[in-house]
Figure 1 (cartoon, helix red, strand yellow):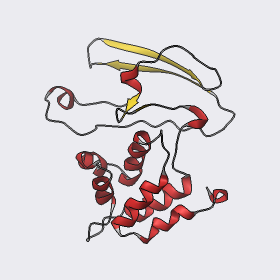
Figure 2 (cartoon, rainbow, N blue to C red; figure 1 turned 135 degrees about the horizontal axis):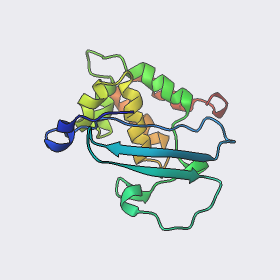
Figure 3 (cartoon, helix red, strand yellow; figure 1 turned 90 degrees about the vertical axis):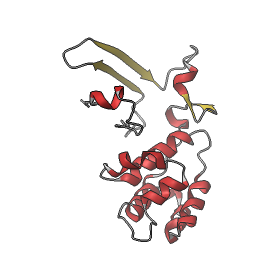
Length: 172
């Protein structure tokens, strides 16, 4: 359960993200997700939504385009075709950028170069700011899955770890 303070929603002054939720498929044999999303005000009315998602089943129903548009360019992908940064690469980037650097070559510069710096206060509140930045970058670039752009940004930051993108598939 995650509570969002009233003033974050209604005051209009809270521009940054409040929270994120990530679901990760740990086994290729898992094809179905069923959950219930409940939203309510303290001591007020509530609403719940049942979510039933099966990646093995083809569904030809029209989808709500506003809900599935990221970056206003392409519809979201789900299942095996969805883009995700390989685990080892993500781990190496996070360990390289999570620790604040006096010269600025850390997660803050990554957020700036990826044009996600409007959420800096949100990222700063997380145990791994870099991981959250990478989550958002993945969500925006799921349609291309191009790690070369991320490698170029890492090189611009001045991190020699940009070479981590040459990790073999067997390591990922």
